[in-house]
Image (cartoon, rainbow, N blue to C red; front, side, top):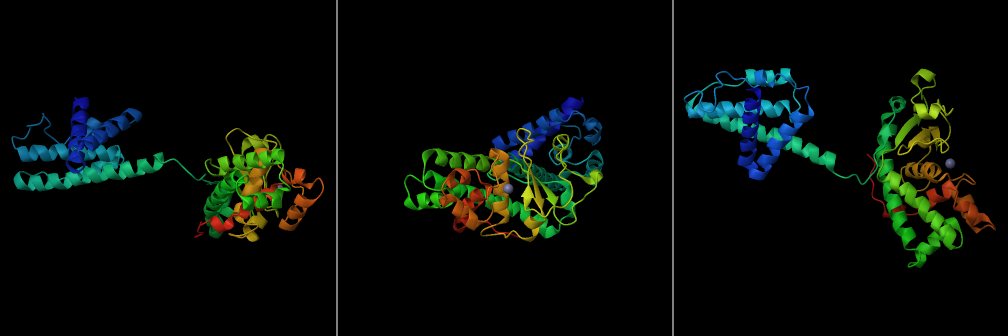
Length: 349
Ligand SMILES: [Zn+2]
């Protein structure tokens, strides 16, 4: 009996959606409801919930308008309990407000309920479409310690990652054009020294590895700025790092740090310090996005900090023996990527 009533109600979900959006969409709606129930075996008691009195099949009331109204009302309860995300109690409230009537009044109620069903479905579909959309920008995850950060600091993280993604995208296109475009060759040589195939390959591979993470993966960021928690109890450093002695505890004056020596496949953890929140700009050189790129090169390719700053990085690229160090120097990558800033459009809130 339960199965009949649920299947029957699902068929009326199908009809309601099909009336507005065609048969295919109606079929999808019915399938979505039934799939939801399969995936949520904990939902029980639907038989009772969908009971509107006198259910004895399609012609229970000897009044076609009332029978039809009841079928759609039942369908609305079903879709609210499934795709609508409502609880049993919330659905019971909707049910308590249903009118019981006949004739043209029943037709009016049917029209109202059909529109409700369609709107529950389209809300679910929109949300689902967002969930399924492939991500082009890696989304940073803010660790619990960010509750100690100002809202400005928090709000800067998303745009900083989005801008880092754009810088990396342009840097990637730039590095691929080095053989075709004299300006791109000049740009490469400014930060990494005279062109040489082996070094070029190394720069390209490093950029690609950072691009792949920042543009597509989730990076977890930890607040280590002013007021960051310094008790072990509140330390949100992941266990696998702590087990290796990487405490990551308390505020630091640095821009940021990572633990390249202790990694877990597919996970990316970056700790951001006082200088990141106080000194780094949103645009230009030494930017928030640049710090993210800098730290990420440490993580993906174990780059070094041979020299810091734009001037020393340029000098390093020109020195005898310098280019070999430049291609493994984190700041050199940061400045190379930041040199593409004029191509970037990210807006900060
Ligand atoms: Zn560094």
